[in-house]
Image (cartoon, rainbow, N blue to C red; front, side, top):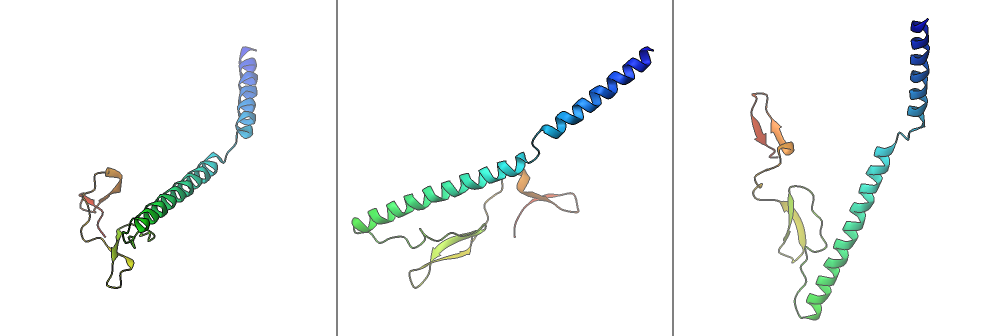
Length: 117
């Protein structure tokens, strides 16, 4: 009789936990990713505004504006001024030493190397 009672109690607990699990929201990661994207966009807007303020101050003070202020370069590239005085993205001449272990690569000879492309 007690085994039957414990079995019934176990089934009720199992059903209750499955109902509670279904009621919890499942797409928290999507919301978190959207929040991160929105924060990045806000930071980019602040960066652009500060760059514009610096550029306008330089023009007012008689300085020539930096052509690289409005150029955005991807990973592994930097902005340099070309012969025409325009900013252009070029490959960085030397990769910095990687300190973050997550960005290192493991070779098939069991060696850990820096990522260098």
